[in-house]
Length: 293
Length: 293
Image (cartoon, rainbow over all chains, first blue to last red; front, side, top):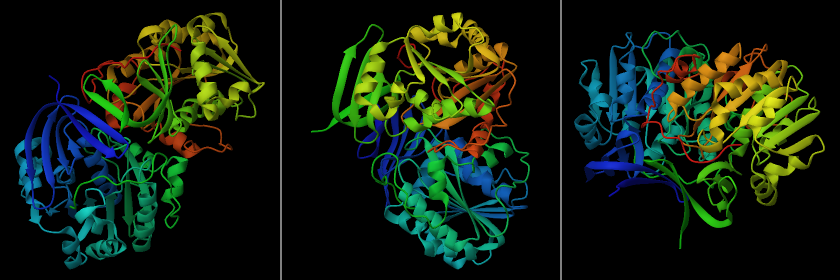
């Protein structure tokens, strides 16, 4: 007998993992949540059928969404993660000795619960005394925080359902206001091969809120196309001049930090804030499922 | 009705493309050859069930396997491609105005034939007067060429079947001898996420033949894990100091050339020639099918 878990990444493209067993399957108030154990990539969290994280490759995503903004800032003390209920981004943030407080604002308490139970290596830092977990809508949270955070990270699901609001110009303006005067923002912004138009739009919107806006890339095998983009918005500090990294990492290095901003030519075009003529290399845009942070 | 084409990338991992139609399916003297038309990535060539190239993302592979060695060399005049019967590497090589002769040595004439018929945008340069096509075993060809080529490219299938010989120390020594005294070699060397042990072995073997050996990476959505490695062996010229690029490209830029050598930390360990303790991030090593160039 063979069991397989298939993510339909678009209408016309799917990635399948051989399965040991399903560990949890439930409808939460926000989404369809599943934790499965796979042979190729270990345990995996899926929301609305989309892979959010896997034990084997989570280090790439979590190191790159955190260390790039945190090493761009000269001395980050307070950090906010919107979404990211698995706790992986918090774990990486708390490796920085300067960080005094890391706040997780996740809309779906069941995601946190499932991660604590089934993904302890990813979620363990949620128990750290420097971490504060708030079950709340991240959009609402940033509206009420003024000048509070040195770093804000949007560790959202794909831009459909509740997460749509995490990709708007209004949200990015509120993020800017929630940051200190030299704060840094980073967001996951989908695949350049499959979501080029979205990336071009987001570049323009973040570019309207931040004087420095830059796209960077990382290789994530369990995500559609395997190539993922992040967008960094900075009020003052140049992301191409990171502080040296003294942490133990598996993906991030200072040289790689700079290399991740050296974009393929077809991605460079999207990364020019305001240039919204992106077209996907593969098929037409088709965002995956999943709900907001 | 839905038609799907599935590549079993490993025993436990598969990638599926929705299919319009199959254009060719035959058993050649060397392998199972298929050309299919897919919705997400256009037409695709598969050998022994493994995706070799697709219309949508071939530009990444072909630009990166050619322009990195060709811009490392100060003035490449003669270039050799081993394998690569689709013609994509030849097309990119012939964009360099200094190149007087580009030789393709492909073991399977049916691959060339199928590419000419169904993948004209990839294979068109095979008709260029500067291109010479030789249907022969590449291993044999490099044994008889002495000091002949400025650049040699191993555009092979995966290291099983006839292609095994393209991953040996003996082959790399013969490649060195077939190069001019400041020649440059590049080879496709599989995925760091899935074939870490192979990469470590190849680094050691190429490192034994060339004074300068370096790994670089590119994002290729239709290949297993989406992240692919190439290994460059150079007799004299530093691959981190490429000549400026004046060509029209879709992936390659001079800055990206340098960025592609900035490796994730887990790949850096493999890239140290001689360090053969690589272990895959995903499941155990399991080379795909496919036969030699």
